Image (cartoon, rainbow, N blue to C red; front, side, top):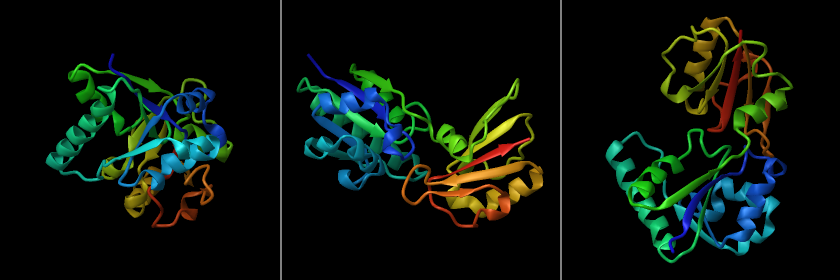
Length: 226
């Protein structure tokens, strides 16, 4: 019998926001994988080990998922990562792949999942609290009310598009282009707030657009309301 590869969301940063199911599955399985070059340095690992200290004694495996737009580099890394996971599944072992936030939102595992399923392996997704839900709670504001739509965009790839749709926006992956994103937000005339490193020791909260610095970390999330 082959094992199953599960992608497990560990939430946005606060280990107390990990689900009971996430904690149980980490405890029940031996092979734990995280995206990165060194497992113990991965943000998802550093979050999870605070809630599950015995994680440090598991078999930890890093899966290199480079941050690049080079499609050929990405294809090769995804193929290599999938084969690494399959090497454990073929031994009848389950694999737990840790990811920040939720396993279905801009998650690196989705690329591996496609290959694994094509190769005939079983996969599963385990939900975690999404970063934008945690950020809204930290800001003490609702994301949506009544019949307002909510648009979730990767700001990294959308810095030239106006925020012209009705409703509210979540701009993820904003950090590396924050200066350009801020200019887009000024033109929108909307209410803006943001959280950097939500739930982590380095968390910073910004309640207005002008409070947000031009340079922020990768884990910066902006909430834009009408």
